Length: 156
Image 1 (cartoon, rainbow, N blue to C red):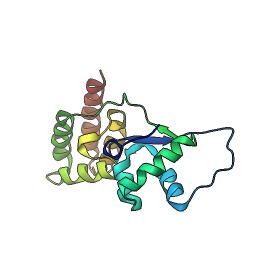
Image 2: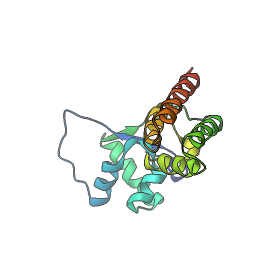
Image 3: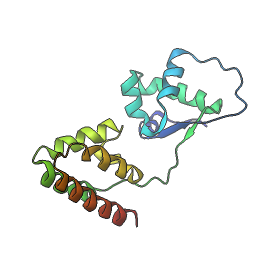
Image 4: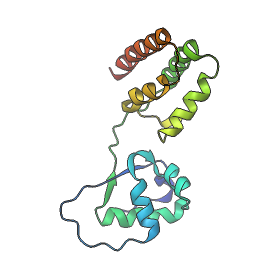
């Protein structure tokens, strides 16, 4: 399966666990790419992290797919919309103040995404990461309760 460089930047790949691993000759770029493919981050983010040009990654990805070492991550992954992030920001502002937006952007980036492509199945992990910034127990409890309800509402 060959992928064009235009579609590659937004694609997400994951490593394949194989019982019949043969001997493969991987150069350092292929190995670096293989180690970073986690089924969460898109290829554009990964290429930027490891310093590989997106056009050069096309050959690497095609070879790794050919060797059956990677596959595309499931395409049915739902992305959180702006209303979720607006609610998250409002709730976090109540808990920690106006720096909430910066914490959200940093946490999303730490998880390997950006606000425009954050998967809904990672929402709980994001809330958990952000809740670590809340010092007061009563504000922490309210934040978690409200966000759990929002996540349940979003996943329906």
